[in-house]
Amino acid sequence: MAADRTLAPYLEGALVLEDGTVFRGLPFGWRGVRLGEAVFSTAMAGYQEALSDPSYCGQILALTVPHVGNYGVNPEDVESRRLHLAGFVISALSRIHSNWRARGTLDDLLRSASVPALERVDVRALVRHLRSRGAMRAALVTDGTDPAKAVDALSRWPGIDDFDLTRQVSVKEPVPFVLEPGEVSPVPVRRAAWPLRVAAIDFGTKRNIVRNLAWRGCRVTVFPAWTDAREVIDFAPDGVFLSNGPGNPARVEAGIATVRRLLEARDLPVFGICLGHQILALALGGRTFKLPFGHRGTNHPVQDLRTGAVWITSQNHGFAVDPTGLEALPGAPRITHLSLHDRTVEGMTLPGRPVFSVQFHPEASPGPRDALPLFDRFVEAMEVRHAS
Image 1 (tube, rainbow, N blue to C red):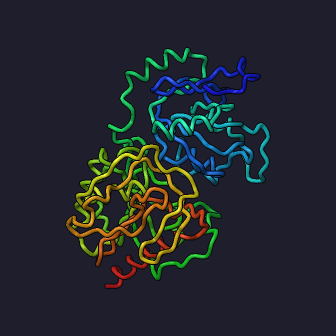
Image 2: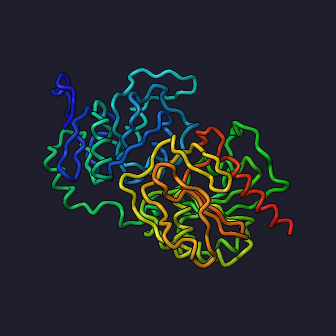
Image 3: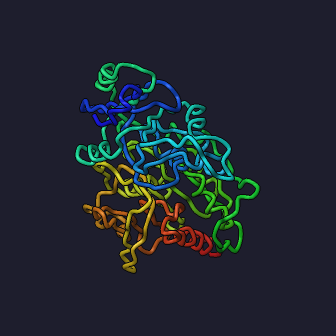
């Protein structure tokens, strides 16, 4: 356990890890007990986007940035319909926020979304622990419950890896995506020559991804994660987008089967991001594996193997595509991008076909615009097919 001794009498909350380690903290947000997988992100800003990213479903997120809440919260920066994470852990909560767009406080948001949170936690010690031991099951306690009871609950909780979490975060029926008034691209983009129909399979998509397609002239319909391939084909899309999302990709069996069937149409453009990248690999016959503590942050260097250029990327995933035998699979998928941190697969393509994917999040653009052309590549592939 690590904590400021002068605050010890007030640190009534606790993050309890499955190995028995306890990190004390000061509760805020919703009061209660939640079980989840403890993970961390090194992003220096964007706490509201992280909180509303469905990819954090079932996880207790710790941020390494020292102060959080400085600019409040607003309705424009949410990435999904609600918060899906199990809990939130930070070093220090700002009691005062200052931003002209702010409509409330971070504490207000977490209370309304029933998300428990702790501040005054020694996040540095927590991150060092997770880096050496790996992501692990944890209980977040903010209502005074004895941490020993949380340890008992953790011993009986199976964790999140054996479940298809996309069923918790996906839309329940097909929904046309509509830009809100005033939602315009912050950078100039090339619009498609004509409206293009995109079927976006929602494994837990972020709104900003779909916005990037809409800004380029795409008419996007978002489909549930379990949609059958026949329904997608009947929609007659110009292209199919495979979204990001939470959890173990191998458990998304319906999505894998759908993508495998869609790949039979050899001229159909397919673009996958994050979980969509992993599902594409599994549909091709590849394998995935769990990383020790994942990649979560906005400063991950990735190399484009075709040009040698290094992109600074935003990432949020706990699994990766196994490169072993990948290029020997039917269709011969070729690795296009590698992480410069650990050489894991960050992108791939099917040679001679308009099918490609990346492990990182090009819509977040921390580079700041390194990866945005990937959306243009998808649009161009759809234009070619549409014109043929």
